[in-house]
Length: 254
Image (cartoon, rainbow, N blue to C red):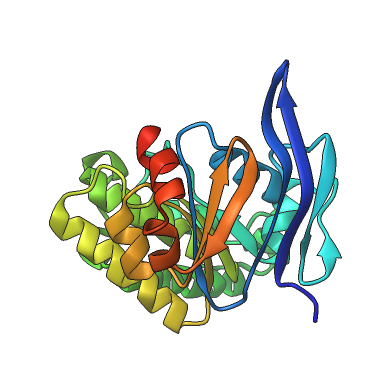
C-alpha cells in the first residue's frame, strides 16, 4: 500500500551541523500526527524539506506515491500540501479577508485581457472568491474580524488567520508549525477544537507541537525526533509515558 506522506533517509547539514540524519517516517491520511522532540531536533527543518523550502543532501519525500524531490514550494502547494510558519508571515496592512484572498489559487483578474474584455465575468468571479474567503474565516471563527486590519487582531486571532490562509490554498495535507504556542487557555482550547473539525472535514494534519497537553488531546499518532532522527513513533500515551523519551523531551525544552 502506498504511503500518504513518506520521508525516507533525509539528511540535511548546515555547515558542520547535521540537522537531519537519516530521517524517515510515514504519515497516514486523515490522521492528526504530532511531531515532537527537544529544541534542535529537526522538526522545522523536516517541514522545510517537505514543503520545498529546503533541499536535502540525501533522501527523499513522497506524497501519495509521487516524489517531491526538486519541486518548488508553489508546485507542492498545488499538489495539495501547505504549511504555516512560526513567525506567522501575515500581511499586517491588509484586512483579514484580503489575507485569505491572497492565498487562494488562480487569481481571477490577474490577466489584463480578461479584466478588459470580460469585466462582468471577472467581477462575478471575484465576488465568489470573496464569499469563499468569508466562509473560511467563518470556519476558523474570525468572520466578525473579516474587515479588520490584520495588525489590529490579537495574537491568537492572527494564529487562526494563518490557518485560514492555509485552508484557502485548498490543500488536503496541512503542516502546522506550533499552532498553540503563545496562546491563552481559552484560545488554546479553540485551536484544538478547530484542528479536530478540520480532521472531520477530511484534512490530514502534521503538527509540530511542544505542549504535551495539546499532543495528548489531538494526536492520533506521534513522531518523536531527536538529533535529526526518528527515535520513536506511536500513540500519544506511549510516547509521553516512555521514561527514556521523557528524559530527552524534558531534558531539552518541550
